[in-house]
Image (cartoon, rainbow, N blue to C red; front, top):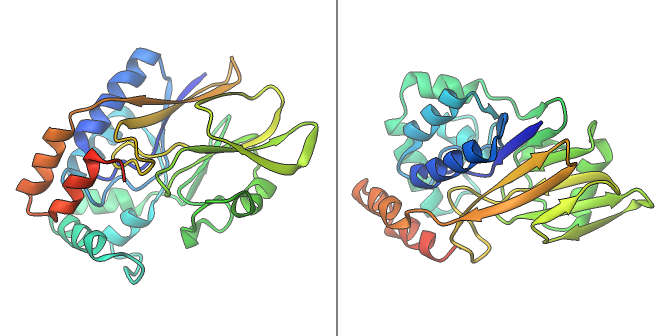
Length: 244
Protein backbone atom coordinates (compact mmCIF):
# COMPACT_ATOMS: atom_id res chain seq x y z
CA UNK A 1 0.00 0.00 0.00
CA UNK A 2 1.22 3.49 -0.85
CA UNK A 3 0.08 6.41 1.27
CA UNK A 4 0.48 10.01 0.13
CA UNK A 5 0.74 12.30 3.16
CA UNK A 6 -0.03 16.00 2.78
CA UNK A 7 1.40 18.51 5.25
CA UNK A 8 -0.28 21.82 6.07
CA UNK A 9 -1.89 23.08 2.84
CA UNK A 10 -3.00 26.51 4.07
CA UNK A 11 -5.13 27.45 1.09
CA UNK A 12 -2.26 27.17 -1.40
CA UNK A 13 -3.95 25.71 -4.47
CA UNK A 14 -0.95 25.79 -6.81
CA UNK A 15 1.16 23.80 -4.35
CA UNK A 16 -1.65 21.35 -3.63
CA UNK A 17 -2.30 20.67 -7.32
CA UNK A 18 1.42 20.08 -7.87
CA UNK A 19 1.54 17.56 -5.03
CA UNK A 20 -1.65 15.77 -6.07
CA UNK A 21 -0.30 15.36 -9.61
CA UNK A 22 2.95 13.95 -8.21
CA UNK A 23 1.11 11.51 -5.96
CA UNK A 24 -0.90 10.29 -8.91
CA UNK A 25 2.36 9.59 -10.75
CA UNK A 26 3.73 7.89 -7.63
CA UNK A 27 0.77 5.55 -7.56
CA UNK A 28 -0.44 6.60 -4.12
CA UNK A 29 -3.54 4.61 -3.21
CA UNK A 30 -4.56 6.41 -0.01
CA UNK A 31 -4.29 10.18 0.51
CA UNK A 32 -3.98 11.65 3.99
CA UNK A 33 -3.87 15.26 5.22
CA UNK A 34 -2.50 16.29 8.62
CA UNK A 35 -4.81 19.32 8.71
CA UNK A 36 -4.64 23.09 8.33
CA UNK A 37 -6.28 22.88 4.95
CA UNK A 38 -7.16 26.59 5.27
CA UNK A 39 -5.53 29.71 6.70
CA UNK A 40 -2.88 32.08 5.24
CA UNK A 41 -3.62 31.25 1.60
CA UNK A 42 -6.31 32.62 -0.70
CA UNK A 43 -7.85 29.40 -2.04
CA UNK A 44 -9.41 27.70 1.00
CA UNK A 45 -12.62 26.65 -0.79
CA UNK A 46 -10.72 25.21 -3.73
CA UNK A 47 -8.35 23.25 -1.46
CA UNK A 48 -11.27 21.79 0.48
CA UNK A 49 -12.90 20.81 -2.80
CA UNK A 50 -9.73 19.09 -4.02
CA UNK A 51 -9.42 16.98 -0.88
CA UNK A 52 -13.06 16.00 -1.06
CA UNK A 53 -12.70 15.04 -4.72
CA UNK A 54 -9.79 12.67 -4.02
CA UNK A 55 -11.36 11.21 -0.87
CA UNK A 56 -8.49 12.18 1.40
CA UNK A 57 -8.47 11.21 5.07
CA UNK A 58 -8.15 14.59 6.83
CA UNK A 59 -7.74 15.65 10.47
CA UNK A 60 -8.56 19.02 11.99
CA UNK A 61 -5.81 21.63 12.22
CA UNK A 62 -5.77 24.72 14.43
CA UNK A 63 -6.42 27.09 11.52
CA UNK A 64 -9.29 24.88 10.40
CA UNK A 65 -10.72 25.01 13.92
CA UNK A 66 -10.31 28.80 14.09
CA UNK A 67 -12.01 29.24 10.72
CA UNK A 68 -15.18 27.62 12.05
CA UNK A 69 -15.06 29.42 15.41
CA UNK A 70 -14.01 26.38 17.39
CA UNK A 71 -10.64 27.79 18.52
CA UNK A 72 -9.86 31.15 20.08
CA UNK A 73 -7.26 33.10 18.10
CA UNK A 74 -5.51 34.50 21.18
CA UNK A 75 -2.22 32.83 20.21
CA UNK A 76 -2.43 33.72 16.50
CA UNK A 77 -0.24 36.54 15.20
CA UNK A 78 -1.85 39.46 13.40
CA UNK A 79 -1.27 38.03 9.92
CA UNK A 80 -2.79 34.68 10.89
CA UNK A 81 -5.80 36.41 12.46
CA UNK A 82 -6.43 38.51 9.35
CA UNK A 83 -6.23 35.39 7.18
CA UNK A 84 -8.65 33.47 9.41
CA UNK A 85 -11.16 36.33 9.43
CA UNK A 86 -10.93 36.54 5.63
CA UNK A 87 -11.34 32.76 5.36
CA UNK A 88 -14.43 32.85 7.58
CA UNK A 89 -16.04 35.27 5.15
CA UNK A 90 -15.42 33.20 2.02
CA UNK A 91 -16.23 29.69 3.26
CA UNK A 92 -19.66 28.33 2.42
CA UNK A 93 -21.91 26.64 4.95
CA UNK A 94 -21.00 23.33 3.33
CA UNK A 95 -17.27 24.09 3.67
CA UNK A 96 -17.73 24.91 7.35
CA UNK A 97 -19.74 21.75 7.92
CA UNK A 98 -17.02 19.65 6.28
CA UNK A 99 -14.31 21.24 8.44
CA UNK A 100 -16.49 20.86 11.50
CA UNK A 101 -16.83 17.12 10.93
CA UNK A 102 -13.06 16.50 10.83
CA UNK A 103 -11.68 14.44 13.71
CA UNK A 104 -8.60 15.43 15.72
CA UNK A 105 -6.93 12.09 15.01
CA UNK A 106 -7.32 9.19 12.63
CA UNK A 107 -6.05 5.61 12.83
CA UNK A 108 -5.82 3.97 9.41
CA UNK A 109 -4.67 0.45 8.54
CA UNK A 110 -0.95 1.23 8.68
CA UNK A 111 -0.56 4.64 10.33
CA UNK A 112 -2.06 7.22 12.64
CA UNK A 113 -2.54 10.91 11.84
CA UNK A 114 -2.78 14.07 13.96
CA UNK A 115 -2.12 17.74 13.38
CA UNK A 116 0.23 18.76 16.19
CA UNK A 117 0.55 15.80 18.53
CA UNK A 118 -1.12 12.44 18.92
CA UNK A 119 -1.00 13.01 22.67
CA UNK A 120 -3.68 15.56 23.63
CA UNK A 121 -4.31 16.68 20.01
CA UNK A 122 -6.90 19.24 21.08
CA UNK A 123 -4.12 21.47 22.45
CA UNK A 124 -2.44 21.83 19.02
CA UNK A 125 1.01 21.74 20.62
CA UNK A 126 4.20 21.68 18.55
CA UNK A 127 6.70 18.85 18.41
CA UNK A 128 10.06 20.58 18.14
CA UNK A 129 12.30 18.36 20.30
CA UNK A 130 12.65 14.68 21.07
CA UNK A 131 11.15 15.40 24.50
CA UNK A 132 8.10 16.95 22.82
CA UNK A 133 7.71 13.78 20.77
CA UNK A 134 7.88 11.30 23.64
CA UNK A 135 4.24 11.52 24.88
CA UNK A 136 2.94 10.86 21.38
CA UNK A 137 5.43 8.07 20.73
CA UNK A 138 4.43 6.46 24.03
CA UNK A 139 0.77 6.10 23.03
CA UNK A 140 1.07 5.30 19.33
CA UNK A 141 -1.19 2.30 18.56
CA UNK A 142 0.54 1.77 15.21
CA UNK A 143 4.24 1.87 14.27
CA UNK A 144 3.94 5.06 12.20
CA UNK A 145 2.25 8.39 12.92
CA UNK A 146 2.19 11.48 10.72
CA UNK A 147 1.90 15.05 12.01
CA UNK A 148 2.48 18.59 10.77
CA UNK A 149 1.86 21.99 12.40
CA UNK A 150 5.48 23.22 12.59
CA UNK A 151 5.89 23.17 8.78
CA UNK A 152 9.39 21.70 9.25
CA UNK A 153 9.94 18.11 8.09
CA UNK A 154 11.66 15.76 10.52
CA UNK A 155 11.41 12.11 11.53
CA UNK A 156 11.53 11.13 15.22
CA UNK A 157 12.39 7.49 15.74
CA UNK A 158 12.60 4.75 18.32
CA UNK A 159 14.79 1.92 17.07
CA UNK A 160 14.19 -1.73 17.89
CA UNK A 161 17.56 -2.11 19.60
CA UNK A 162 17.01 1.06 21.70
CA UNK A 163 13.24 1.22 22.25
CA UNK A 164 13.39 3.73 25.11
CA UNK A 165 15.57 6.28 23.32
CA UNK A 166 14.07 8.85 20.93
CA UNK A 167 16.30 9.98 18.08
CA UNK A 168 15.66 12.23 15.13
CA UNK A 169 16.83 12.48 11.57
CA UNK A 170 16.41 15.15 8.90
CA UNK A 171 17.06 12.50 6.23
CA UNK A 172 14.49 12.58 3.48
CA UNK A 173 14.26 8.78 3.16
CA UNK A 174 14.10 6.32 6.05
CA UNK A 175 13.96 2.53 5.96
CA UNK A 176 11.68 1.42 8.78
CA UNK A 177 13.00 -2.14 9.05
CA UNK A 178 14.89 -1.41 12.27
CA UNK A 179 12.41 1.17 13.56
CA UNK A 180 9.95 0.29 16.31
CA UNK A 181 8.03 3.58 16.11
CA UNK A 182 8.28 6.55 13.76
CA UNK A 183 6.68 9.94 14.32
CA UNK A 184 6.99 11.82 11.04
CA UNK A 185 6.45 15.54 10.56
CA UNK A 186 5.85 15.85 6.84
CA UNK A 187 6.45 19.60 6.63
CA UNK A 188 4.04 21.72 4.62
CA UNK A 189 2.44 21.63 1.21
CA UNK A 190 1.52 25.30 1.14
CA UNK A 191 3.87 27.14 3.46
CA UNK A 192 7.24 25.48 4.16
CA UNK A 193 9.27 27.04 6.98
CA UNK A 194 12.61 25.28 6.65
CA UNK A 195 14.04 27.93 4.30
CA UNK A 196 13.21 25.73 1.31
CA UNK A 197 10.29 27.29 -0.59
CA UNK A 198 9.48 24.13 -2.53
CA UNK A 199 6.28 22.30 -1.71
CA UNK A 200 6.60 18.93 -0.06
CA UNK A 201 4.83 15.71 0.82
CA UNK A 202 5.58 12.25 2.20
CA UNK A 203 5.22 8.89 0.50
CA UNK A 204 4.76 5.93 2.83
CA UNK A 205 5.22 2.56 1.12
CA UNK A 206 4.14 -0.27 3.39
CA UNK A 207 5.51 -2.98 1.10
CA UNK A 208 8.98 -1.42 1.01
CA UNK A 209 8.53 -0.36 4.67
CA UNK A 210 9.88 3.09 3.84
CA UNK A 211 8.94 6.72 4.35
CA UNK A 212 10.26 9.39 2.00
CA UNK A 213 9.76 13.15 2.10
CA UNK A 214 9.84 14.68 -1.36
CA UNK A 215 10.12 18.33 -2.46
CA UNK A 216 8.88 19.89 -5.69
CA UNK A 217 8.99 23.24 -7.44
CA UNK A 218 5.60 24.88 -7.95
CA UNK A 219 4.23 28.15 -9.31
CA UNK A 220 4.86 30.49 -6.39
CA UNK A 221 4.22 33.57 -8.54
CA UNK A 222 0.69 32.41 -9.25
CA UNK A 223 -0.11 31.77 -5.62
CA UNK A 224 1.48 35.01 -4.42
CA UNK A 225 -0.62 36.91 -6.95
CA UNK A 226 -3.74 35.13 -5.70
CA UNK A 227 -2.98 36.20 -2.12
CA UNK A 228 -2.32 39.83 -3.04
CA UNK A 229 -5.40 40.00 -5.26
CA UNK A 230 -7.55 38.76 -2.38
CA UNK A 231 -6.42 41.68 -0.24
CA UNK A 232 -4.61 39.50 2.27
CA UNK A 233 -1.40 40.83 3.90
CA UNK A 234 1.45 41.01 1.36
CA UNK A 235 3.72 39.35 3.87
CA UNK A 236 1.76 36.11 3.37
CA UNK A 237 2.70 36.18 -0.31
CA UNK A 238 6.29 37.31 0.19
CA UNK A 239 7.16 34.55 2.65
CA UNK A 240 6.33 31.86 0.08
CA UNK A 241 9.46 32.83 -1.87
CA UNK A 242 11.66 32.41 1.22
CA UNK A 243 10.27 29.26 2.77
CA UNK A 244 9.82 30.87 6.18
